[in-house]
Each structure stands twice: as C-alpha cells, then as structure tokens.
Length: 139
Image (cartoon, rainbow, N blue to C red; front, top):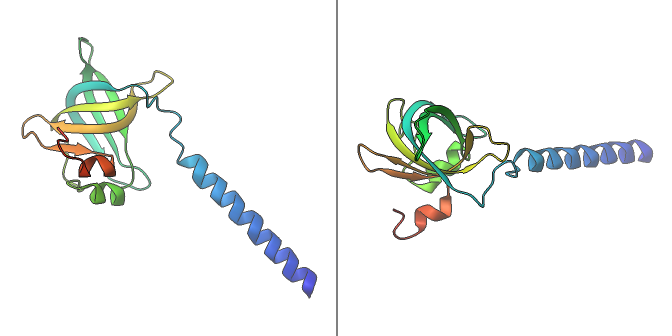
C-alpha cells in the first residue's frame, strides 16, 4: 500500500515539474531583441484577442522604407491587457491606422513584441506593458 502511494506521489511530482518547465519555456521572450526598438506605420489587418497571447497583424513599413510588409506583433494575454488599461477586444480594429513601437524578432522575420501602439486617427495610446500604463507622460 505504501509503495503505491509513493509511486503516485512521485508521478504527480514529476508531472508537476514537467508542466512547470513547459509553462516557463512557453512564456520565454528570448526570441525578441529587447535591446532594440523598431517602429512601423501601417494599417491593422487582423486582431486576434485570444489566450495565451493577443496578436495584431499590421500591413506597414519601417521608417525610411518604401516596402510595405505584413508584421505580426505579439502581446501578453487578454486579461493582462485589460489590467494594463484601455485595452478591450474592440480597442484596435482592422482598418485602424497605427504607429507601433516593438522589440523585433532576433531571427529577422517581420514581427516582434509590441511595446506601444498609437492609433493615428484618434491619438489613442495602448501599451502591452502593465507598468508603463501607470507611468506619467506615456506619450
């Protein structure tokens, strides 16, 4: 009887360790170069308001570039964005003209971790950083 309890406890402990490791691996941000900030200007094509990460697809170009490209911007979860202030499922919609600051992907692909999004028609400012929303003079 004791050995069965030991086996079950050990199995549960190993399972919890594996699940914890997988969660940390999934939430790694090492694919983004946080030492760099790039900016694109463009139009929102799609907004994916889903767990575990909200994503925005933007057709735009970098400053000084004539080439328009499709960019994928990743953010945190919907719950974190709501707590950051100002975000909602419909805060940013397809067709919105935007300027986006982001940390680029290290592999050079067109995407990154969104830092700040400004809707150019309204001046509304959104950030994926909960602490930055609390800072004075966000703009």
